[in-house]
Amino acid sequence: MKKHMRKHAGKCWVCGYECNQSCNLKKHMRIHTGEKPYKCEVCGFECNQGGSLKSHMRIHTGEKPYKCEVCGYAFKGSNALKSHLERHIRIHTGEREYKCGVCGYVYNHSSALKRHMRIHTGETEYKCELCGYACNRSYTLKTHMRTHTGEKPYKCEVCGFTFKQSCHMKTHMKTHAEERLYKCEVCGYTCKLSGNLKTHMMIHAEERLYKCGVCGYECNLSSHMKTHMRIHTGEKPYKCEVCGNTFNQSGHLKGHMRIHTGEGLSNCVVCGKAFTHSSHLKRHMRIHTEERKFKCDVCGFACNGSNNLKTHMRIHTGERLYKCEVCGYAFNHKRSLKRHMRIHADNRQ
Image 1 (cartoon, rainbow, N blue to C red):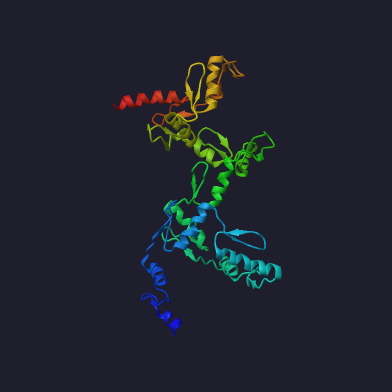
Image 2 (cartoon, one colour):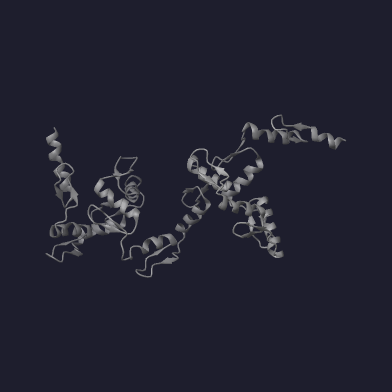
């Protein structure tokens, strides 16, 4: 009788849920009140149960206390291990009882078949209330919501960079590895990520997919073309928060910031001038050594930089990249256009 009476010890007045301990009822009521007393000190994640916070913390610690005795695979949660073990039983018995009536695909779990059926029905169970994005899995929606909240629970312990998804951090961690696993068979370029090598290989492709309608510049990457077009539009979306200087590439802003932080600067041993990139210092040193590595095949003009030679060649080709939008006059130097624009500015005054 005493045991039976515990069933009536607590009842939720909202949904009728019953439990035999007041503490369980208190936990349950948080579903209705929205109270979340447990907060993660790392990323600010909040939840309504201590056990949920404990499970969440494993995202940051990487702890996987639930281990499969069959194959040794480890999990962060007991439910994940339970589902995994059910699969093992079916794998060893050969049982695959859940079959799709549309395409005949078979599964060893009813939930997997249910999820699969949404491919045929077009049903999307989970929907974002902010932008309408729809998906078939709760964790996919949870990951998507981070685009709105800005939450980045995965943090690199080497550089502090944070990520929305664990797979992104896993890829990022390869950048800290000393070993360069991927090598270009054409020029010997090495990198740490397969995606970087794939991008690099486009440099060697004969066919150029993108062509600039202004100057004819060709490239194989849309991102390179987008960056190139800023030469003509003058767009500089990257701004220094310290001095207000603007740049057309994020890498240029990153290099510029070293001027303010003093980090990684390369100094000339002759005149003491500081540079944000070692390649800039190398080019600068040619001033002191009088080395003129780049020579014009037409007139014999020599200079110490490839860009200088490229600019010089416009004298012979007649190419004029920089056009005045007021009068249509074109120039082969950006500084010449800038100087020319003062004429129009003076006329307006």
